[in-house]
Length: 269
Image (cartoon, rainbow, N blue to C red; front, side, top):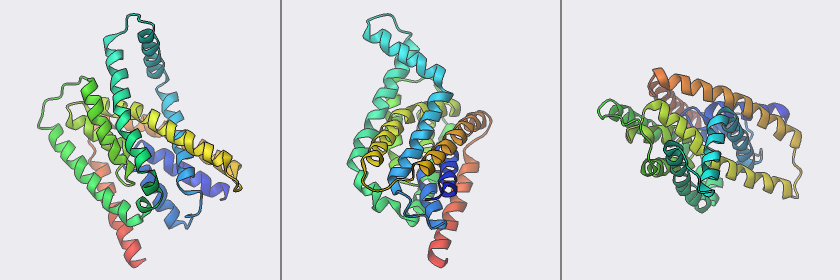
């Protein structure tokens, strides 16, 4: 793996992790397009995900610190801000479904779920979900309030992102919109909800790379992670600014066009 390939994959990961277009799907397509299928597969993907998780921690450092303080105060039986307590519990219960399914489907994700045609199909399926979320968004009242029950339901939507092509941010933002949250609140919760799962997966795969007997191009892995971290910060800021004023439709059209391109390349390329 060259440094250029690693940086390219890092940029793809950083940009697409927080836009509703599927980072894993784009990594698979980038490898296929540039013939980089042997670049450490899911393990390297997880390292890039780890870098983008760190980007979320840095970007939302104030909110994360506030939630940690709420957790410590709760453990110490001290008074806790009800809003912070609700958000903390919502994130905890919302994380559970993805952890259970992620561990159960890990072997399938490394084999069956790496097909470009599958990515194309899921890109279309995800677009249909986003369309429905946008339609519902304009036909139902928005509560603008997070609850523990809502957090768990959004966590179920996050499980859809285990299939490459769906998009973690897209699935969770759509879930939040369908459950009555604003686009911006859905996006902020989606990014915070991604932290535990992505950090856990990245740490696990990092340990596998450290303990493997095979040679690892650590310099290339490192520069790819740095590229993912920097572009991830920019993508978070862009997405939060975007959803304040715009719908998901530009991403829906992008996904449909990309899916058509992938099918054409696979069948006729």
